[in-house]
Amino acid sequence: MIYISHRGNIEGKSEKKENNPDYIMKAVDKGFDVEIDVWFKNNDFYLGHDSPMFKVDKEFICKEAFWCHAKNIEALYEMSKLNCHHFWHQNDDYTITSKGIFWAYPGKELSKNSICVLPELSNYKSFDCLGICSDFIMRYKNEINQNVNRG
Image 1 (cartoon, one colour):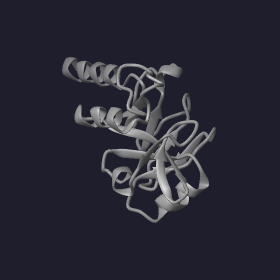
Image 2 (cartoon, helix red, strand yellow):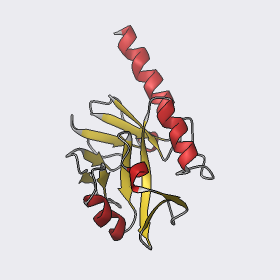
Image 3 (tube, one colour):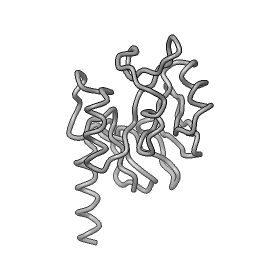
Image 4 (cartoon, one colour):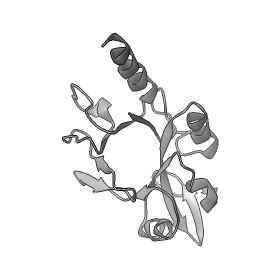
């Protein structure tokens, strides 16, 4: 199971910290992958959900642990030229990342090659999928590990 922190959150939403490079790296240091929101503007990459906020270099977004969500077409195009894991989606039921993994909209049916996104917004009974992306990723990791140890 791949455990993905949503914008750096691991134990709940923190909109003031989301997508901040320091906040993101704390999640990586705790062993999580991280979904980050990436913009490209004026020849530079930025992180931020609703707008470009934190300027970063291309080496930063290409870290192995990152799942880069392109927030504008320029970011999608520029990341397609790099060796970074990226994707685009808005309200699509599914999208396919640059590594061929299915990114499932919250509440949609899962497959063995999909990421369950924000399960806290849905009523999943089990997680028969490749990974989970959540604002509460620590909780899901602990629950799944406890169930594995009991089973």
